[in-house]
Length: 118
Image 1: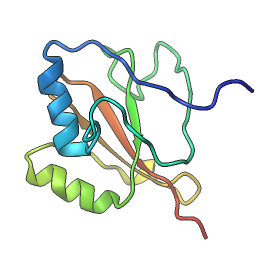
Image 2 (image 1 turned 90 degrees about the horizontal axis):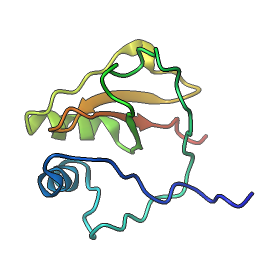
Image 3 (image 1 turned 45 degrees about the vertical axis):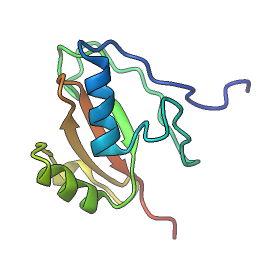
Image 4 (image 1 turned 180 degrees about the horizontal axis):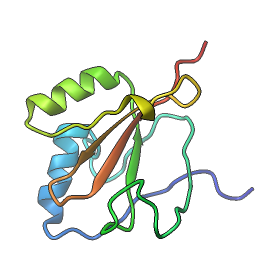
């Protein structure tokens, strides 16, 4: 298979520099500049039905970011005044744990902590 993984995520923003700084400060994305060296691991590529209610209907995409130490990240985000949504039904031993936030422009972001390797 010629595709090795996600090479970039590109989307429009009304204030790209401000939004990039928010991602850098709160999620550590872009701390080294625009190139983001990711930890090896799974990524999901899943087009959703246009009528999905999995993320807001007025958005064409939702970022899903694989994280570690989800609880600590949630605490950090909440301390910064960022609303974090969690629901017990989103979590399972097979898929891991999830939380949701929105960036300052309203883009939905799902934080995913995969299950620990046994």
